[in-house]
Image 1 (cartoon, rainbow, N blue to C red):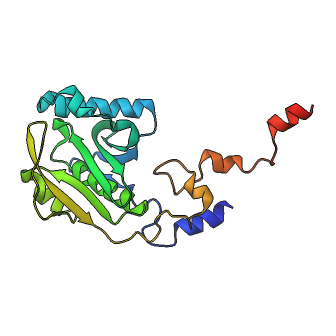
Image 2 (cartoon, rainbow, N blue to C red):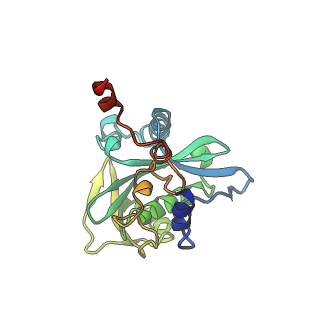
Image 3 (tube, rainbow, N blue to C red):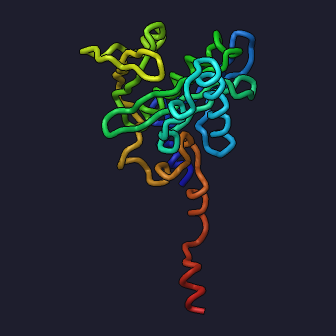
Length: 220
């Protein structure tokens, strides 16, 4: 079964692991890594980074930074040599995804990490089948988002929150050749988020004989 699934994951040059770049280095030769938050410890790292950047530097009130959407979203964590350095939030709607809360600790700015975490978020959205990605950008950061293929939305609508003015941005993308869908292998669809390229715990459990422990206990 594994060989068949691995063959499926390599149908295209992008593959199910295309959002990751396994050999990324910053200018000072330190290793850059991006992962999906998957534990309480990971979420604590997200909170710490956003607290330092938005609450500490931008003086954003707590209730505005932690706005009630963190438990219905995917979070990415970017590290440099294993140190949590950046995070980003993605929320998924019916026909578009939304990139939010990109934060990079001040000591890690100027590295490739900020672009890598945004690029990874874009590719994850493509893998999930989205071809439209939405976000809000400060005026000075519009050139950065344009590097990812974003453009300001028209007509321009005023968007102001937490004392900053933003521009609505849209990233139109090409469909991912291996986008997850109802045609995907059912075992791929139950793998942990972001780990679609390798067998997950439920997939491995399928190697055991089919039994019904509850039924067997009642029969005894």
